[in-house]
Length: 88
Image 1 (cartoon, rainbow, N blue to C red):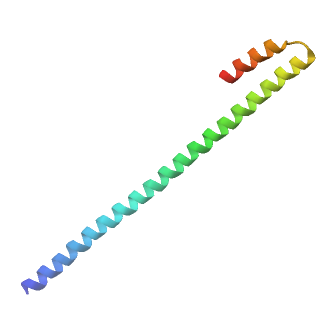
Image 2: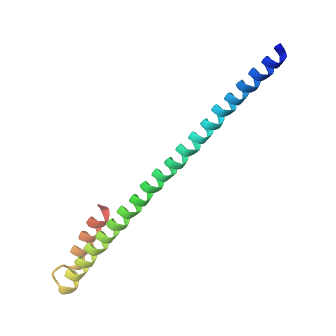
C-alpha cells in the first residue's frame, strides 16, 4: 500500500515538473517570436526612413542641378552645395 502511494505521488510530481517545464518553453518561444516581430518592425521603419531620406536628397540634388543648368549657380557653387547636402 505504501509503495502504491509513493508511486502515485512520484508520478504526480513528475507530471507537475513536466507541466512547468513545458509552459516555460512555450512562454519563451512566444516571447522570442514577439521580439522577432518587434525587430522586424524596427528594421522596416528604418528602411522607410532611409528611403524617404534618399528621396529627399535626390530631390534636393535635382533642384541644384536645375539651378546649375539655368545658370544661377556656378559649377563650384553646385559642388559645394551638393557636398553640404550629402554630408548632412
